[in-house]
Length: 319
Image (cartoon, rainbow, N blue to C red; front, side, top):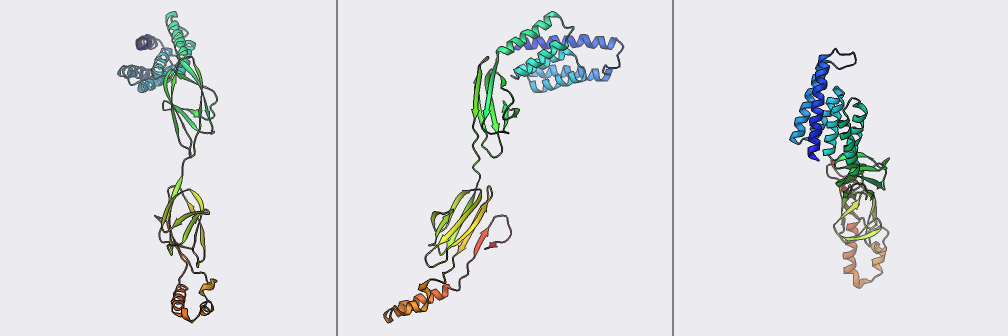
C-alpha cells in the first residue's frame, strides 16, 4: 500500500506543476490568489512531499493542508488523504478523497477511479466502535488524538489494527484500553470510571498517652497514631477515665498533613477528686490518700489545649 501512496503523491505533484504553469501563463481573475500566495502554496506543497519522503507524516499533512488553504488545487487533497491513510486516520481520509472527487471536475477518469478504489479499500479496513462511558463529560482520545466527550454523538469509525482508547475525567482514575480491531467489525466497549482516592494524613497524640482515640466514632487505639483519611470533614475524640472527653471537628484537604496534640483536662465532677471522698476511706489509707489527692490537686492546674499544626502555615491554632 506504501507504493500506492507514493504513486498518488507523484500524480498530485504532476497535477500541481501543470496547473501552476497554466495559472502563470494566463491573466488572473479577481478571485484568484496573487503570484506570491500561489508561489507560497507551491513551496509548501514541495516541502510537504519532502517531509512525506522523510517519514514525518504529521508535518507533511500540515504543509499539504496549508498549501490547499492558500490555493485550492484539488490534487493537493490526494496528498492530504494519503497522509491521513498513513496515520491510520481512515475515516478522515475517506472524507478528503470524496471532497477531491467533488472538486476535481477536470480530473482524468484514471485519477477519479484511483480515488474511488482508495475509498473502497479504506472502507473495508474500518471498524465501528461504540464507546459507552458511565460518566458524562469525560474526554475520549484514540491513539493520542481527542475525539470528543462522553457521551459521544455517534460510534467511532477506526482503522483496523491495534488502537489505544483513553478516557479521562477530573476526579476520576483515567482508563486506558488497547483494542484489537478487525475491518468491517462493529464493537461496543464500556468504560467505568473509579473516583480518585483523594486523602490526607492525620497525626494525633493525646496527653496522657493512655487516652483512647476515636475517629468518626471508631476506636483507633492509644498513644501517637497516624491515619490516612479521605479528604473532607472528620470527628476526632479522645477519652480517659477521670478526664473530660475531648472531641473536635477537623477537615482535611487532598494531600494535606494535619497534626493534633490533645491535652486532656481532668474532670472536676469526678467524685474521686473530692476531699470528702478520700476522708471516708479511713485513717489507715491516709498515706495513699494524701498522695492521690496531691496528684489530683496538681492535675487541676492543667489547661486543655489542642495544637493543630498545618505544614506551611505560620503559628498554631489553639482550640
